[in-house]
Image (cartoon, rainbow, N blue to C red; front, side):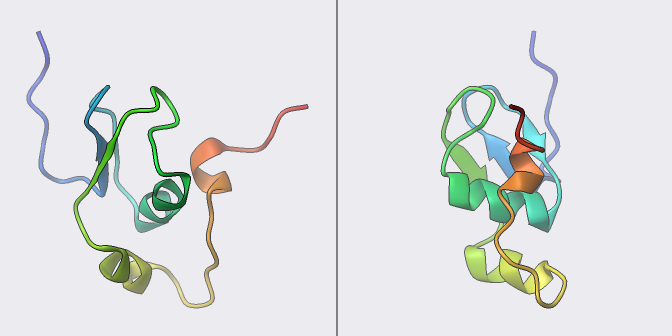
Length: 72
């Protein structure tokens, strides 16, 4: 049985229902285009303009914040 999910999220995967809660994660996931866990579709709470406005000044795209440090 799935637990009820809160509507307090920045991004939610419609496949595995995993959620992310920060503007940086939303920005990185928007660039990736799909869930890094299951490749499912992503549901964003806010538009890209709202997400970008919530990031600290001089922040660039940050998909590494979603995927983590690359492993060799």
